[in-house]
Image (cartoon, rainbow, N blue to C red; front, top):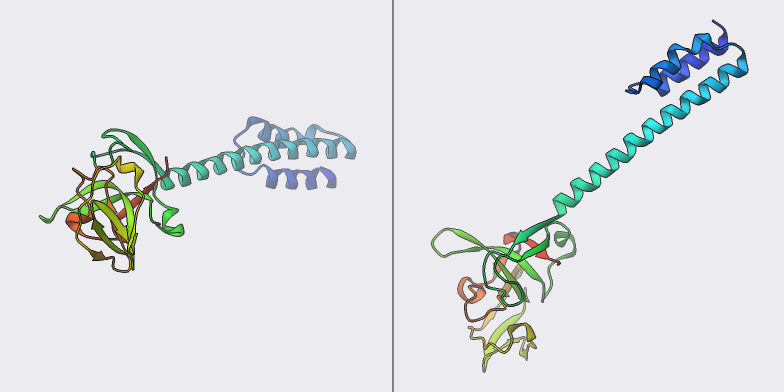
Amino acid sequence: MSAAHRLARRVLSVALAGSRSPWGAAVVAELDQVTGTWAVLRWTAGGLRVAWRERRGVRLTTAAALVAAVALATFTVRPIPSGAMAPTLGIGDHALVDRLTFRLTGIDRGDVIVLRAPTGTGDWFTTVDRVIGVGGDTISCTGGRVHRNGTPLEEPYTHGTTTDCSPVTVPAGTFYVLGDNRDSARDSRHYGPQPAANVDGRVIL
């Protein structure tokens, strides 16, 4: 075996290590039948192309799997569990929920969130509500309208429904939430502002 053959075999063995393709094995096995230095170089180049195509396929498959895993961890489609947000969201409607990035970007006033809320009897229930106040805000109701820091809110999503609530200053790290369906929603008027740890996601679609 010539020096060119030995070098070519070493290069191809490294490049095709772990190859599942029969072409990869054939490239190495039939190398000894190739004669001439230039022919060996051409044969080696062909083997490296096989290795590149396989590696590229593995890289693309791995990248696609990673993207899918991140998407599944970040977003989920959930059915709306109650009528608290009607008519904006009806019972059984499906919403795309961001379960990850909101932890980095934060929750703001007006966001619609998925929340684990206390029942008052030691249990929890899942609800979807709108964030009305964040830490430091003062929430009150006058004449059926919600006021935040003394300013009445424009809330077209309630479709003219009146709102009654007790004045409260929202503690730091918590959110004051109300359902759009003010007549029947069970929200912060009942269980108070809720900590950020109870937020399970932000509705984005």
